[in-house]
Length: 173
Ligand SMILES: CC(C)(COP(=O)(O)OP(=O)(O)OC[C@H]1O[C@@H](n2cnc3c(N)ncnc32)[C@H](O)[C@@H]1OP(=O)(O)O)[C@@H](O)C(=O)NCCC(=O)NCCS
Image (cartoon, rainbow, N blue to C red; front, side):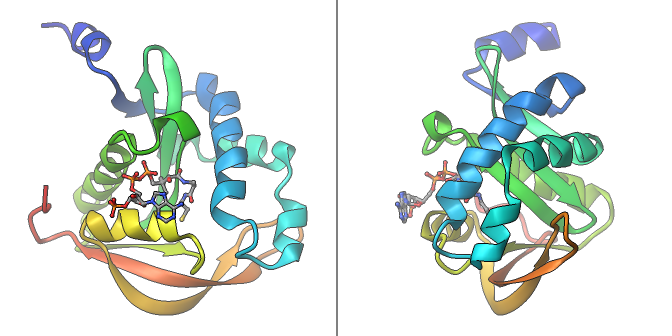
């Protein structure tokens, strides 16, 4: 079967991002950022998180971004930066479907194939949904950290938790 035929029959699949994904990614990111962060981060950070900066930050990350596609729509994305899963966001309608797990496993595979034995990510303490999701996929909470969030005014320290996964272990599912 041709790869495109397989893609067409799957409910969703993961592929490398292209410039055509920028606007959908920025929208998913903007809405998802609010869902995961409002009330859990310093108010100063919220002021920086405008729609326009999600567009420019999405464009800057295309080289290290993978997207989930479903029925021709971009429904989620993941960004890898070295050994860090820097971003993972899924459209509201695609949450709870397995799309996020497919994206996170793709990020782990990319980090592993780049030669890293461990991957990490930062999540704000109040983002319970994300934390449950990471735990279920075998990531462990290694404690509080100060994460330097990228803003137009320079890095901004945000209280977060560091989650890690050992990439030398077989995946739990
Ligand atoms: C984080 C995210 C990618 C996870 O994907 P998902 O499809 O929602 O994940 P799942 O539904 O598979 O798992 C979420 C878990 O949280 C639970 N959950 C659902 N709603 C919840 C809520 N309001 N509060 C706490 N937990 C919740 C689910 O039951 C599930 O837990 P379980 O596996 O123990 O049953 C997705 O929710 C998202 O894009 N959120 C907004 C953006 C974000 O926060 N990104 C991460 C930044 S670090």
